[in-house]
Length: 82
Image (cartoon, rainbow, N blue to C red; front, side, top):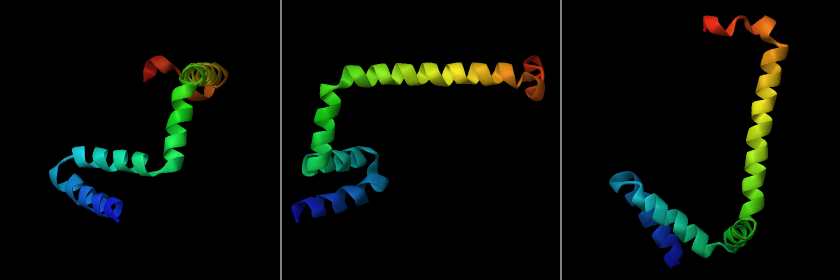
């Protein structure tokens, strides 16, 4: 009951006073939710793997964009004209 009351209060105070109360609302969700706690523990335990995945994802997007630019540059036109 108190959690629902705090969610309501923080939800009202967020738009009226500032984003600080939205942050409190999110922190309350993490403290209450068991699945969110498990998610945070899994993220904290495997942060190195997640960072590696992020780097590989950025590299793949970069490589795909370079490849598609080279393959379709006749359809795109001269990039210096932009």
